[in-house]
Length: 102
Image 1 (cartoon, rainbow, N blue to C red):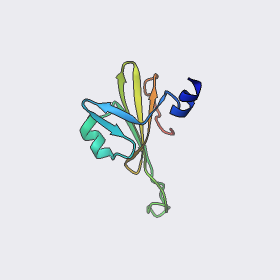
Image 2: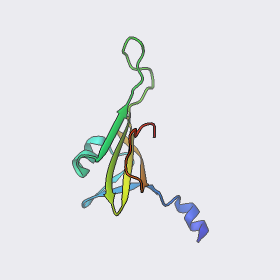
Image 3: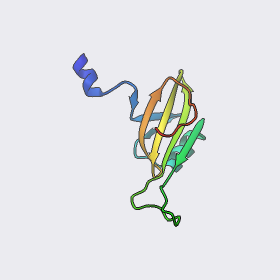
């Protein structure tokens, strides 16, 4: 049993999120998730890092966090890098400012 738990990963880590009849998975973009799940309960964004002249730094990324819930007492925290979903985290605590840094 312990081996199966270790292989499956932590129970708090989710790779999909159910929004009505649809599933949202890592790799989906923000527009699809917004259309599927609606507006998030809370959100925050930062970046990309800028040079002194206002041009984005090379390889700089925009990081965003959206929070959905509560669903059964849990909140789903979605982290995006350049508008692509890279992580879904299930937490029992409601969102508190600041959401960033992750």
